[in-house]
Amino acid sequence: MNVLHAALLGIIQGATEFLPVSSSGHLALAYNLLGDKPDLTFEVFLHGATLIAMVTYFWADIVRLLSALMPGHADRKDDRRLVLFIIIATGISGALALVMSPYVEGISASMTWVAVGFLGTAALLAMSEMLSKRMTTLQGPENLGPVRTAFIGVLQGIAVLPGISRSGSTIAAGMFSGLSREAAARFSFLLGMPIIALAAAKDTVDLLGGSATLPGVVPSIVGFVAAGLSGYLAIAWLLTLVKRHSLYWFAAYTAVLGTAMLLMSTVFARG
Image (cartoon, rainbow, N blue to C red):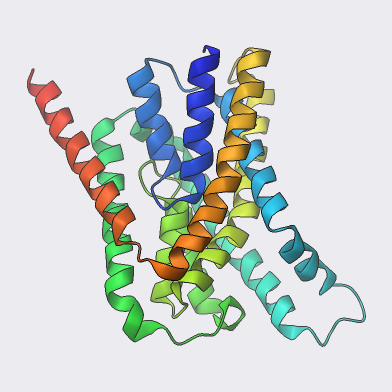
């Protein structure tokens, strides 16, 4: 992998990890268009960069939530409840992701299935916007309750499949569960930190098992920096955008992309 490809893949990973458009689907498409093979080691660097971007942006939230667990803060019930809900959703998501992980590589290699994933993301985003006005009833994610939290965790777990957006699925699930668009987006990012950390840890274990080779040092550094910077900017942009605009634009984008990929797959299959 050359430096230019590494930078491009880093930007794609960083931006699409947080925007509701599927980072795994975009990476699979980018690998295919660039003629590169998926590189597990390189993707560990990218996951690490996006995790650092999230921790940096939400550092104050992380400190607030962790400090609520310390002795002497039993009165901060909302923060403690939110931590519990993050743990519940992460546990469900992680279990589902492990069950489906053997099938992810094969699906990533099929542009048809990736296209179907993009269309699924488009449908989720559009439905969440259509139904959100009649379903917004909660002040914040600390009021979700175990059942709604589990539902969000299930959709986050399914998003391990390429083309299905993790952030899009969790934002949509949050809106279905009664959260406003902005509250659902912030909860989605908080949920993203532990699940991205678990994904990076799993990939690292796979590497130690000898399932991948080490990439070049310079491309890895370039990809890491590109993913971190683009990821941080994507978080800030999305949180600003959802305050004023709907998710229909992202639904339209993923719908057009998925449809175009399906048409191209059909043409190439016949050709």
